Image (cartoon, one colour):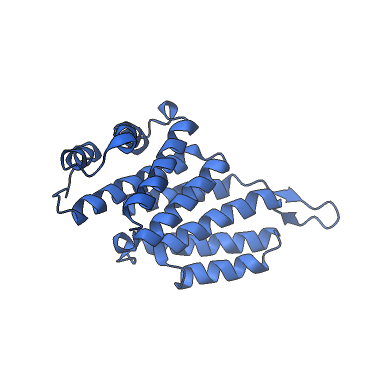
Length: 215
């Protein structure tokens, strides 16, 4: 999970660098159009909430600055400085319970972030997040049913769940296609992954959580 969070930090860093900046013709000041920086900032808030928790100072400081931000260059750069600080703490190993945060609540955060990324055209980010949520959900469900899945591949986990009769019917058929999409996402084979693939993973995870984690 830490590797997946790290990838998303890097993607958001690149997205910031590609934000469009305009110059005010009246006073010569620079500003960022709403559609760009607000979408980026929203994705950052989702990530900070998932990594550090909604009560943590990184998320709190960023959201406070976001509320005051009007899009002026110095304000958006201030948001980026907060983001960089959070990334530095994450890269420096100052987050000790990332894995423990991936619970039912954080699954929801992951799905929200993945759905938003897909809507905004960031298919690759959405694919990584969706597949990460799926793989972790499958592992947790298998472990809860006393299956030994530590260090197993997703394909092995799927086979273990099917052998134990823990997935069946339409869910079983849909699950068979998931390891292929997961492997392409984790190996960066983006050209082989389409938006329908990502949408299918998101739909499966939502249904899986509803049927397996809401009892």
